[in-house]
Structures are given as structure tokens and as C-alpha cells.
Amino acid sequence: MRLLLAEDEKDLSRALTAILERSNYSVDTVYDGEEALAYLCSNNYDGAILDIMMPKLDGLSVLKEIRKQKNPIPVLFLTARSEIDDKVEGLDAGANDYLTKPFAAKELLARIRAMTRENTDAVNSSLHMGNLTLDLAAFTLSSPSGSFRLANKEFQILEMMMGNPGQLIPSERFLERIWGYDSEVEVNVVWVYISYLRKKLTALGATVQIKAVRNAGYFLEELI
Image (cartoon, rainbow, N blue to C red; front, side, top):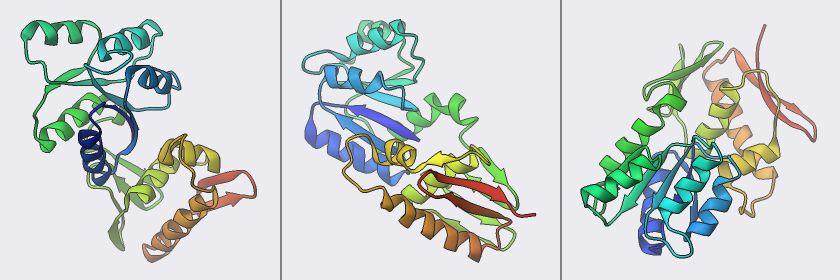
């Protein structure tokens, strides 16, 4: 799951990014409202975390603009403000939730799970294909032969493929979705993680395999 984090306090932004990535989220970070709006207009995120008080454009203005564009992305506001009127204004503008600084990491993660629940079909949902089950809450891949807890990038790649069974996903799409638009990683890094996943599928005796189409991408196929 890919999130946009817009927070102008860079120390806090780095800390939040570390927390989110440890929880298997993929995160793009920006530090002002104009940049946040530009990123959100790409419609490439499952959720957004916006600070209200940001340079260039405040979080409320960003939210009002994306809602004007009919963008339904779930939005969580982070703010030092705690007055009821401010919370009401944010929720009325279309925010899904509101978290006042300081806050506990566990509460932040719970709020994110709650606001994205509709998109993920419930927190404890799983994806199934062949004899494989991908647990979206525990980040585990299992078969009757055993299970693995997947690393962040492995999990996100397999989630994309199991969520779109049989559909060819270009390598560039993996890069955009998981590593981000601004990433300087080479496209062959996708092949490296695909290789890791193939080894795990073999170890699990999977009835599913990752197929490659040269210079195009990858897809999942059930073995007959």
C-alpha cells in the first residue's frame, strides 16, 4: 500500500517514514502543500497523511482542492491544533480522520488501517491464488507446506500481482508504485525481488508461478 506523507518538520517526517516502512507501507515524502498537491494529482496513492500547517499551501487547502477534483483518496490530518472547531473544519472539508500531535505510533498505524479499510476489504483480509494465501495484515505468504513473512518490497510486489491475477504488470509500474516517482533505482531491481519471490514460491511448493514477458513485465499464472 502506497502513502503520501506531507510534513514540513523533517525530523518528524523521517521518523514517521521509518515507522510506516517497518509496517510494510511504501511512502513518498514531501515538505510543503504545493508539492503535496502535485503528487496527489497523480492519483497513485492509497492514502495521504497531511500536516495542516505547511509552507506554500496549508493542508486544508490541499484537501479542498483534491476533493474539488473528485479525488476520493483517504486523508488523515496531522496537526498541533487541538481545538474542536479546527477538527470540525478538517472533517467537513473531506478528511477521513484527524490526529493531534504528539501521538503514539500504534495509534497512527491504527488510524491508517481504519481509513484505508474500505480499499483493502478489511484489515485482516487475505489474497488467494492456487494454494497460496497472502495475509495482508501479517504480511505472510503461506501454503500447506509452510509460510514466510515477506520483506516490505517482496510483499508489495506480490500484493500487486495477486491482486491482479494473470494481468501483466510492467516493471516500470512496480518502480512507480513501490519505489516512487523520484527514485533513482534501476529497473533491474524489480528482477532481483522477483528472484527472491520465486525462491520462496518454490520452497512453499506453490501451484502458482511468476511469468516474465521480455521487456514488458511480470504476471502470476496458476500451474495446471
